[in-house]
Image (cartoon, rainbow, N blue to C red):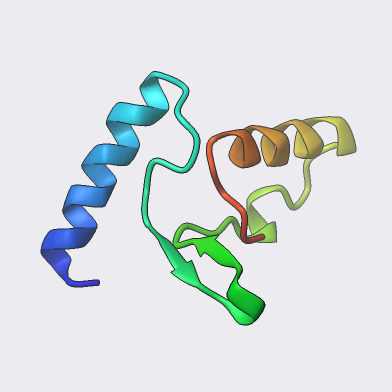
Length: 69
């Protein structure tokens, strides 16, 4: 993916996420024919939060199309 494609995908992400769309950005082929989103969420994002808050943030990310943690 080049810079232009990334910017286009980011714009699509912003527009579709605002309307609750699923997988608004490109996916990349992974093992066994599985497609994973190109956006990932690192664990450091929820480090130090309570379990309840961390679970809610992970669930929100998944609902918005993040599949790689």
